[in-house]
Image (cartoon, rainbow, N blue to C red; front, side):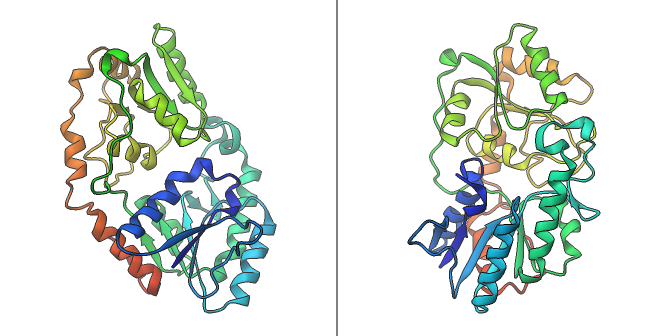
Length: 319
């Protein structure tokens, strides 16, 4: 039995896809997985099994609770899923405040969150991460690391898609709005294109509805100096076969050959407009290549994750 703890994420709506990817994948390879939210009458901790928590420790009380539980039940395991770039001891410290808004530009927020994570490190049995570029920042802790690629589940039904003639939104973006992204959206709107910007914590069913009736999904960078692809955004459009366009970034990932990137010799706005005006020009074959990729074998990936959770002995798993 695997226990996924969601208590530190409030309603957990904005991180549903992270949790469900792990739960569904482990279910597929025969592992029972349950959620625990610290609700009255249901224990938060699995006393003799594997407890998985997604990093986002904004409050010290959660860290204290996890440490007490780990010490109380020494036969249990604690696996932490990490999603943020760690450099010089602080999450996202390399991001210039001028390139972000909200919590991305709040250095004190990241200092507190990083401090809380560091308090938990001695009690962690293993780390799971989704991006290859994150590995160097976490290897310093000497903890077993499992790199979890994002692969297409066998037989998963597509999310709803409206017929092209019924798509009344030209482009949609979902995520944190930064100055760079806001400028892109405004430039498209000034050319009389209907662009919808969804907040990062939009529930999945609402996001699905907007994506279903949009001609194009946008994948702009956080800012000019951004080096990382938003892998979850890329994964979502690939697995659900949404016409999309992403800005080029310098860090390579195992999704790059399937994602449609804008031509860096043209403006991103012009590339977006071309796809809105000529939807038939999008290379649909990329979706099939992603689904059938031998390097991203869903079953193999989750069998390895299942082994890692049982042993925590590998320093680095790859497919």
